[in-house]
Amino acid sequence: MTDHSTTRVRPSSATPAQPSSAASAGRILAALSGVLAAAAALATGELLAGLLNGIPSPIASVGSAAIDFAPPGSKDVVVSLFGTNDKAAILVLVTVAVLALGAVVGMLARRRLAFGAWSVVALVAVGGLASLRDPTAVGPLVVVVAALQAGVGLQMLAILLRAAGVSGRPGRQVELPTAASAQRARRGFLLQAGAVGVLALLGGAIGRAMLNGRAAATADSAFGSGPGGTGGAAPRVTIPQAVDPAPTPGPDASLSVPGITPVVVPNDQFYRIDTALITPSVDIASWSLRVFGMVDKEVRLNFQELVQLPLVERYVTIACVSNEVGGNLVGNAKWTGPKLTDVLAMAGVQSGATQIVPRSVDGWTAGFPTSWLHDPAHPRDAIIAVKMNDAPLPADHGFPARLIVPGLYGYVSATKWLTEIELTTLEAIDAYWVPRGWAKEAPILTQSRIDVPSSQSVPAGPVAVAGVAWAPDRGISKVEVRVDSGAWQAATLATELSAATWVQWKWVWQATGGQHILEVRATDGTGEVQTDRVTPPNPDGARGHHQIAVQVV
Ligand SMILES: Nc1nc2c(c(=O)[nH]1)N[C@H]1C(S)=C(S)[C@@H](COP(=O)(O)O)O[C@H]1N2
Ligand SMILES: [Mo]
Image (cartoon, rainbow, N blue to C red; front, side, top):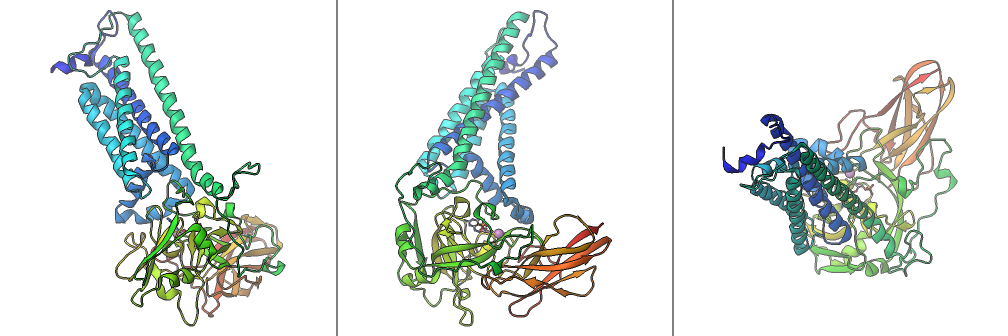
């Protein structure tokens, strides 16, 4: 036995306890001390990240790093990970992993405090390094936060181990001669442990709440329209009227079918997909958009300058490549902003520039061919959107500016929290998702979806079958429905807002008793019929017809 191990076995009463049970009790207390010390360190990081700009959440940073460095084999898992619930799951996973490591640290520290100390430092360093990958991180602040986390973690570890009587200090023997004093000591430990736990929970929760609320609050304050605003702060920016407004959709754009997806999806119901575990919080006063690379002269615009350009309004349907057939990662909104081509013209795009690479404040990239904008037969109005459905762009949808490119999947185009546009070649840069196994070029595939009937059982007789179909920006010329693989029946189409948007469709089915399969397909504006050849979303979008099973009673 070495000298520092003398503290492992301590008498828990006047009668010497079984060494093994005392040792395992000691291990448990040490592990618990480690978990709580880790919780305190984590809470310190989240709280400071919540309080101050320039400090990314260490937990979210480690989660992001894990996603970014995920092995290629896990790409299919990873792409479907970015729904809101999945983000919460990633954050919980990282937290649990760190707490579990904390238990190990506690047990190491029990053997020798220095082991524990070094492992705390190592853990904190991982968080700090992950945080530094975030372009919004302020390096020295991150280092200070990491040092504070290490300090808090070590201090808590030392205090709790001492209170538990399992301090790993060499040569230090803890004396607990009687049952009564052992109980007192145990109670002292539990009190201290409880206090550390509660403080960590509280600090962590406050930090997290601030992190989650920050982006929306920052976006709101830019327009002086904070929640509960009694007059509110003076707006720091205003967005002028559009010179080229989109007409308000007429009644013919919507079919009156209960349960059908609205032709324009409200902002708070719009799908959300991105890699940001915490919504980037952008200060509009210091934000700018830089256009550089293969241009005649680099251009940098602040928000006020950007919105002084002629603003246009367009209804455009955007879709996620990872949307399954029948899925809801697709939406239609009215987008307002300057045309991308106007901003590019200010910089003067050089003739060799074959790719446009937009980049977000958090370093995410998209990339699409320059030729997509300059198709002579079919010029497209890509928009640097600053408004969504007449409201300033919501934080979750890219405040203060994002790209909307008709006809392309989001991952190659629709960059939120936009801050840079690089002109380059198609060969020079592969944007974020390309090395992760997704297609380099990704036009949105023709798709159609059945929204109603939404219940699996319907009464016999006339039943409204309805939904949406999209083929941006080729438009939809026809939607057909069939029952049990019978003859295709033409559905009624609402008036489409533009070729870049989806369109509602409806067909009335004379339902007869029994189990039936309903199936839909669309034909795009070029006359091409939606394929029934099924493919998974990876690498360039899901193909196949949406089918639903219905029981007629
Ligand atoms: N900065 C940034 N922009 C992004 C993404 C992202 O991960 N980061 N994801 C893209 C993807 S994959 C899609 S489908 C659309 C979704 O836009 P929405 O969340 O506004 O619906 O945003 C795109 N823009
Ligand atoms: Mo996407």
